[in-house]
Amino acid sequence: MPFTPSEIKNKTFTQVKSGFEPKEVEDYLEQLSNEIERLKEDKAQLEKVIEDKETNIQSYKDVHQSVSDALIQAKHAGEETKAAATKEAEATVAKAKAEADKIVNDGVEKARRLSFQTEDMKRQSKIFRSRFRMLVEAQLDLLKSEDWDYLLNYDLDSEQVTQENINHLNEKDLTEEEKAMKAKAEADNTAQSNDDPNKA
Image (cartoon, rainbow, N blue to C red; front, side, top):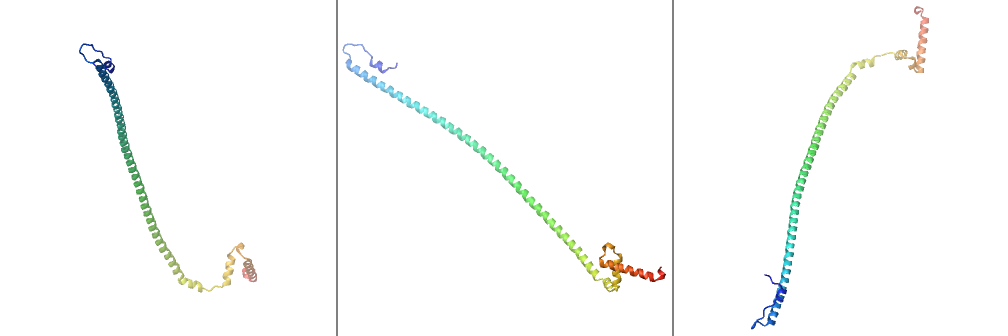
């Protein structure tokens, strides 16, 4: 059975003849009681230390577990972020490549169209030049024609030509001088008609 310091200190014995010195026994029991009391206090302190250490160990384990969980979550988040960034980067590159291809294709198409238009303009210019040359040569041939010499050398009475031109013009288109010439011509014709009895 366990002994307490108080029980040891207050323990009584049956006295017999030729026994131990009571005073020595009491002193020893008191020392033994004090030692046991001290040992109990030490034990309580040690148990407290052990309990604290176990608490600290548990806290450390909890912290370790939290850190481990956080690291795992961070790893997963990092992998997900990396995957998302990679996917977005691939999409961006694909989009940029498609736009670049479109720009290049548009540029090639425009260059082809300009080249075609340039060749068409050159062709039309050649046709125009050829036709214009033919026209100019035809006009030159016309100017070199002998008909011009005939027309230029044909002698007409300039006064008669002028008078015939005036007679064919409308009254409103004549100048005052031409009206006077027309009136004079008509008067001369009338006088001639009056002088020639055969015309009457």
